[in-house]
Length: 210
Image (tube, rainbow, N blue to C red):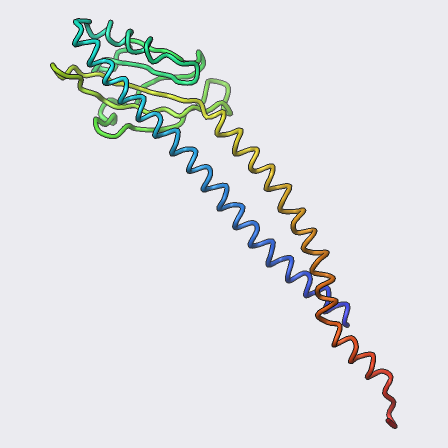
């Protein structure tokens, strides 16, 4: 009976710890994923703002809309950063940093905001695991308030890799922690039940006539 109580105490302890560890691990994963996503989204907003400033400078120097778009795309060209510039009617003017298999179809023009960017995730053609985060916004470039649509994009490869690494760590640490807790709980249960075991042994030694 004592061993049964000991096993149940250990099982209760390990189960409670497992629930806590799973909840904490899930919370850590979600918080990190949100933090990384917010950082990427903020970077995309900054790129769009920089592109709007660059377009304004190029137009002020006398370039036409297409030349200003090409110049801005070239200036902000980066292997890790995609930039696509359309005119106000959604016609492509210039692009840089786009992977060939990545679609850049604009959402419906009426759905593209002029204040905060519309941000969404797309995957490459035939590569569902190769995801990209895109942000698109209308900009009106002074002094003539020339309308452009600017799309900025960034790959999610690094984010996905970090989350996979975190998941692998959690899936390794949690079972090992539970195993250690189970062994420790078994011996702690033994210590906690030691007085009961001693009393049981003493009771067995006491005869009816004592």
